Amino acid sequence: MLIVSLLILVILLWVALFKYGRRRMYELAAKVTAPKSERPLIGVAHTFLGDTEDIMTRLQGYSYEAMSSNGGMLRGWLGHILYLFTVDANDIEVVLKTHMEKDDLHRFVQKTIGYGGIFAPVQIWRPRRKVMVPMFSPKILENFVDVFSLQSEILSRKLEARAGKGSFSIWTHLSSYTLDSVCETTLGIKLKAQDDPKTPFLFYLNKLLDLITQRIFHLWLQPDWMFKLFPQFVEHEECVRVLHEFTDQVIKKKREELKIEKIARPEADSYCQLQDYKNKSFLDLLILLSGGERGYSDEELREEVLTLIIAGTDTSAVGIGNTLKLLAKYPGVQEKLYLELRHVFGDSDRPLVKDDLPKLKYLERVIKETLRLFPPVPFIIRKVLTEMKLPSGHVLPIGSGVVVSIWGVHRHPKYWGPDADKFDPDRFLPERFQLSNPCAYMPFSNGPRNCLGYQYALMSMKTAVARILRSYRVVGDEESSPNPQMRVKLNIMMKAVDNYSICLEKRDR
Ligand code: HEM
Image (cartoon, rainbow, N blue to C red; front, side, top):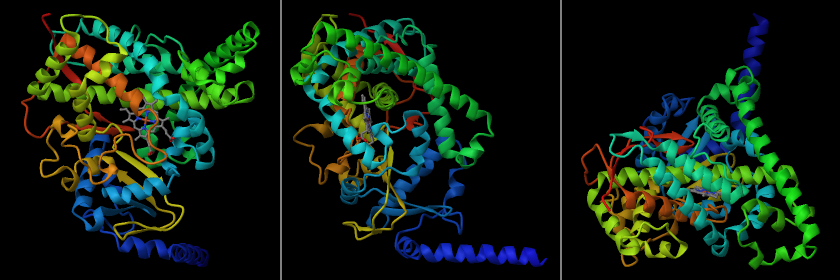
C-alpha cells in the first residue's frame, strides 16, 4: 500500500513539474479558440479515431471552425502535444518564412529517405536545397516535356481498353504515368510501370506510403519499439529494402558510366557550366552540382532521388485525377477546354511539344482552380522552436506545431469571396486574380522551403490532361452543381475516396 501511495505521489509530482515547465505553453494556448470537440486531458485526440476519410472530414471541419474563430486560429491538443491550426494567410506567410523545421510526425518517412531534403532538419536541408535549386530552372525542366509527352501518349493508348466500358478507377494508370515520368527524369531509366502496373518498385512504393500513413494515424504504431511488435514492421523493412536496392543499383551504374565518360572526355569538368546540363537526369545533376566525385556519397544520392520520386509521383497523379473528376462534373468547362485544345492542335494527333504548353492557358486555369479546391497536400506542419508573435496577435509557444491548412486558406471567403467553394477556373484570369497575400493560394506551399517541383508538376499535369482530353470525353456519374463535392481521404495526400473512378468516351476525330 505504501509503495502504491509513493508511486502515485511520484507520478503526481512528475506531472506537476512537467506542467510547471510548460506553463507558458498553457498560458498562450488558453488565448487561442478551442474547437467545440475539445475534451479535458485528451484534447481532440478522440476525433481522429476513424478511417482516413473521417480524419479528412475532421480536419476540414477544423478549417471551417478556424475561419470563424479569433485570428483564424484554433488550438488542437493531441493529449499533451499542442497543435495550432491556422487559415490566416498573413500568419501563414510569417510562419513559413521563419519556422523551417518540420514536425516530428515526418520522422516516419525518414526511415526511407533518410536526410533527403523534404523532411530533413534545417541544418541538413539548407545546403541540400542549394544543390537542388538550379536543377529546377526552366532551361532544364523544358527538356523533360518530351518525356511527359511520350509517357502521356502511352497513357492515352492504355486507356483505350477502358473507354466506353463504364466507370473504372484510373488511379493506377495515373500513378504509373507519373512514376514512369519521374523515374525517367530523375534516374534516367525507363521503369515501364505503365506496361506492367505490378512492377515491384510501384508495388513497394505504394505499400510503403500506406504503412507510413498507418503509423501517422495509429498512435500504437508510432514508438519504434512498439512498431517492431506488429507485422507491419516486417512489411515496412521489406519495402525499404526493395526501394533502396533498386536506387542503389541505378546509382552504381551511373557512377560507372560517369567514370567511362570521364576517361573518354577528360574535360568533363565543363559539366559545371549550365548549358551542359541539357538532357541530363536529376541524378546526373545531383552528382555534378554537389561536386562530382567529391560531392554526394551514394547514400546521400539515394536519399535525394528517393525524395524526388516520393515528392513527385502521387502528388501530380492526384492533381491529374482531381482535374479529371472535376471536368466530368463540369461538362461546360470540359468543352471550353476541348475547344482550346482544338485551337492549339487543330486536327492533328501529334504529340505535345514544349511550345504548346504556354498556349494552353485555359488548361492552366483549370488545373490551378483544381489545386485550389483540392490541394493534393492539404496541410503542412512546422515545429515551433522560438516563441513568436504573429500578425493576428497570437503568440506561438515553443514546443508546439503549427498546422497550416492549405485546404482552409483556399476555401476562405475572406480571400476567395462568398463563392469560395465554387469551381470557377476564370478566377485565375490575370485581370481577376488579385490576392491580398501570396499565401492565400499555396498548393505548392510558400516561403524558403516551398515545393521545388511546382513548375515540373504543372508541366507534367498539363501534358497528361491535354493528351487525355484530346482523345476522350470524361463523363461523370454525378450531376454538376455550383459547388463541387468529392469524397476525399487523407492518405499522406488528399485523395478521392473512390480511387478516381471515372468514365471515358472516345472522341470522334
Ligand atoms: C501537384 C504536385 C505537387 C504538389 C501539390 C506539391 C506540394 C508540395 C508541398 C506542399 C511541399 C511542402 C513544402 C513545405 O513544407 O512548405 C512540397 C515540397 C517539395 N516538393 Fe512538391 N509538390 C508537387 C510535385 C512535386 C514534384 C513533381 C517534385 C519533383 C519532381 C516535387 C519536389 C518537391 C521537393 C524536393 C520538396 C521539398 C522542398 C524543400 O523542403 O526544400 N514536388 N511539395
